Amino acid sequence: MRRSTLTKGIAGLVALGVVAWGGTVTYLEHFDHAGAPKLPANSPTRHDPVAMTAFAAFQEVRCDYCHTRNADLPFYFKLPLANQIMNRDLEQGQRHFEFAPIIEAFQQGKPPSVEQLSRIEEVIVQNRMPPAAYLTMHPHAHLNEKQRADILKWVRDQRERYYASTDVAPQFRGEVIQPIPETIAVDWKKAELGRTLFFDKQLSGNGQLNCASCHGLDKGGVDNQTTATGINGQTGPINVPTVYNSVFNIGQFWNGRAKDLAEQAAGPVMNPLEMGSHDWTAVADRVRAEPGYSDQFTAVYGSDDVTKNTVTDAIAEYEKTLITPDSRFDLYLKGKADAITAQEKRGYERFKAIGCSGCHSGVAVGGDAYEILGLEGPYFEDRHSKLTAADDGRFSFTNNPSDRERFKVPNLRNVELTGPWFHDGSAKTLDAAVRAMARYETPDHDITDQDVADIVAFLKTLTGKYQGIPLKDVPADAPLRAAQAN
Image 1: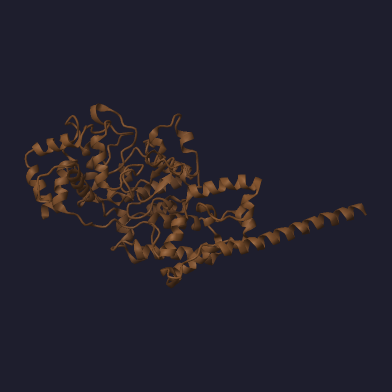
Image 2 (image 1 turned 135 degrees about the horizontal axis):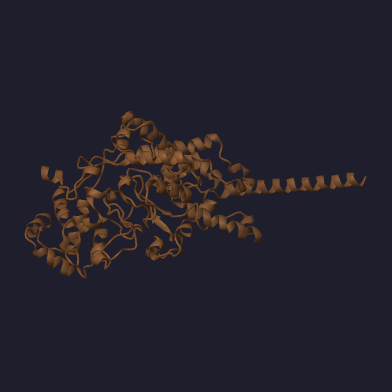
C-alpha cells in the first residue's frame, strides 16, 4: 500500500514536471518567434528565395541570443543561479562569433564577409549549433536536414554571386577558397618608384636597412626569423607577416592597427626597434638628395615633393604587385583535376572538415578577419610563462576587452616558405603549426598524424608564382616585369 502510494506520488511529480516543462517550452517558443530578427519591408532579401529560406532557419534557431550583444533574452536567463551559468555561455558565444553583422547583411540585402560565411558553413557542416543544453528549452530550434541544407545553399550562393574569381571552374564557384587573380589594377609607374623605395636603405636611421630586410622577396616575403631583427641588431617583439598578397588583408600588422598598405609602410620607418628613423623630414631630405628620385617623383606626382605621404603611397602601390597566383591549388580550382595529388585533395577535405577553413578562406586563404588565438584551448597558458604586449593582439590597439588575444588571421598562401609561424614564431615546423592550430582553434583538438601529413601536403600546394616565377626561385631583388613592358 505504502509502495503504491509512493509510486503514485512520484508519478504525479513527474507528470507535474512534464506539464511545467511543456508549458515553459510553449511559452518560450512564442517568445522566440515574437522577438526574432525581422526584415524591413523594403529589404532586398525579401525578393531572394535562397536568402529567405536561410534567414527563416536563423530566425527559428535564434543565434542572436548568444551571439549578439544586448539581446532580449528569455526570462530564465535572468534567474539567479541560471544567470551565473548562462552569462558564461553568452560571453563565449560572443567571443566565438558575432551574429549582428549577419542580421544586418540580411536586412540590407548585402553579402556577409568571406570569413563570416566560412564560419557559418563550418558550424553547420559540423552540426555544432545550436548546443544540446539550449535545445532542452528550445526544441523547435533544432536544425533539421532541410534547414541545414538551406543555410549551406545560401552560403554557396553568396560566394558564387559576390566572391567567385573570374577564372574559377564552374564547380568551384561556391568553394571556400578561390584562385588568386592573375592581375589587379596597378599604377605601374608609381609601383616602379615604390619598388626603388622598398629597397632603399636611406629610409632607415643608420642607412643599413630597408623594407626588404624583413620582407625578403626570396624568403616568402618574410625574414624566416622567430621575431624581427631591426636597427643595430635589436630584436623586435613579434614575427614578421608576409608582404606577399598583403593587398588582400583586412588590415595590416598582426593587430590590424594600419588600415591599409600605405599606413603600414609608414610604421617600420619610424619604429625605434625596426628601421629607426626619427622624423619624416629627415627621411625626405635623404631621399630627395639621391640622384634620379626627382624625375621619378615628378613623373608620378607632378612634382618632386618627397613626403611621408608620397613615399608610403608609392611603396603601397608596389606592394599591390606582390601577388602570387598560379599555385598548383589555383590550377586545380581552375579545372585542372590532376594539378594536385590524391593526398593533397584529402588534405584539403580534412582542412575543411576539421574547421581550418572557418578562418582561412577566400583568395588569400586568410587575412580577411580577426580571431581569438586560443579560441578552443589555452594557447597562452600552454605556450608562454610570461605574456608580452605583443600577446595582447588587437587589444593593444583598440583597448576593447573583447579584442584581447585577437589577431589578424594570417593568410596561408606560400605558407611553406614563411616560417617560423604564428605571431610569436613559436611553431618551428609546418607540422607543428598545423597540430597547434587544430589543438587551440578547433573542437577537433587531437588530430591524427595522417591528418597532419595530409593537411601539410595540401598547404604546400598553395605556393604560387610572382611575375610568372615560382616563388621558391624569386630573386631577392626581383624586377617589375609589367612595369618594364610598359
